[in-house]
Image 1 (cartoon, one colour):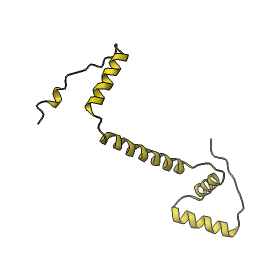
Image 2 (cartoon, one colour):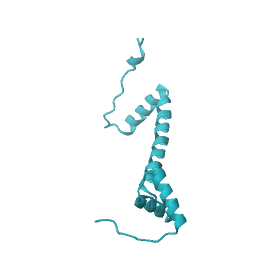
Image 3 (cartoon, one colour):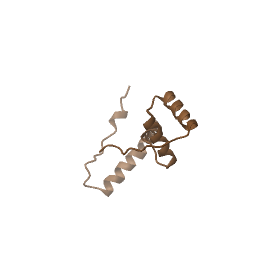
Image 4 (tube, helix red, strand yellow):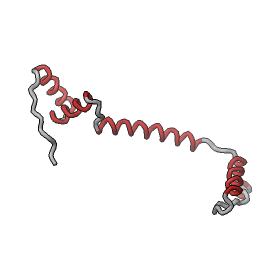
Length: 105
């Protein structure tokens, strides 16, 4: 279904500002007017939503990087695994001797 058509008359100064924006952005008149109406009506445009999501993703990536750079003490990991096994004896998690720390060059 095509978008509905809306024809409006605008003052010359608004038309000049619209044409200047179209020239500066390379966006069509229709897209520029729709973006302006969305902003006026409190509706976010797709570009606004993409920008918001990119910003949130950046924050999450930073948090993930911070978490990956932190290392928990091995005793904490061992205690967590032992506690998990006590609470869930049917769990497939198995404890292994820490041979990876021995003879490590």
